[in-house]
Length: 123
Image 1 (cartoon, rainbow, N blue to C red):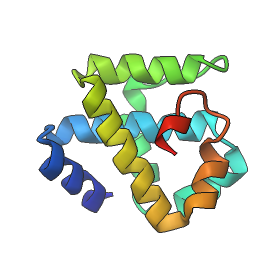
Image 2: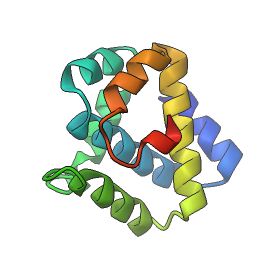
Image 3: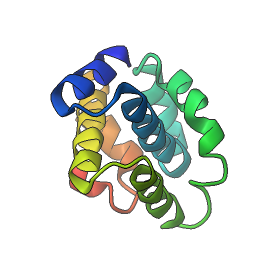
């Protein structure tokens, strides 16, 4: 995860703490809304992602649950609350999914996230 975080910070100029929080939101969304069996496979291939989600989960508890659109809309709201612009959200989201694809393959990432509304633009 540190490689991903460092890359996003260097490329975007977003402060490290915000990048970590944003990645926590994105991966928590995938964890709570994605195909649970496939997400478990994915997370094994992404060392540090469980710890990142766990560290950020205090501010996410209950936020990303409930309803088909509850998770994605809540995630966007949380990312906005971090002060991220739409472009920054797109940049962090795209980097997160590109990292996951590089580590686990495109098919697995698609299977994890395919049913999450709004994430298809990043796949």
